[in-house]
Length: 88
Image (cartoon, rainbow, N blue to C red; front, top):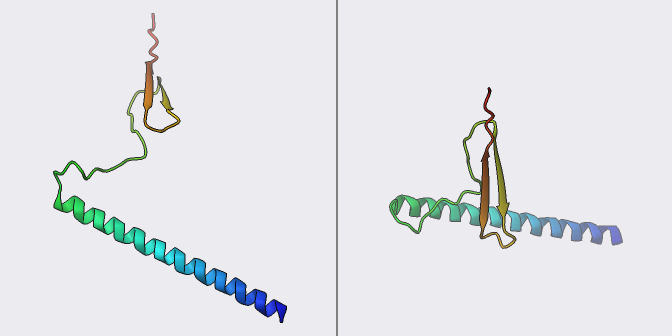
């Protein structure tokens, strides 16, 4: 009888997790669709921005770039070294 109770509790926990996961997916999809329609409606609006989680830099192979992000994640520092050697 105890194993049936444990199995029923495990099934209930799994069902709750599945419902929560599906709700999260639905909410994220709705927010994504809303942001897309807002971006289309206000193409020139400054409030709608695409936030990128990375910086893209196109340089030569010899270039060295050091990047520091502050602990509060609001300040970014870049140091670029164009290490070119001159052949004599």
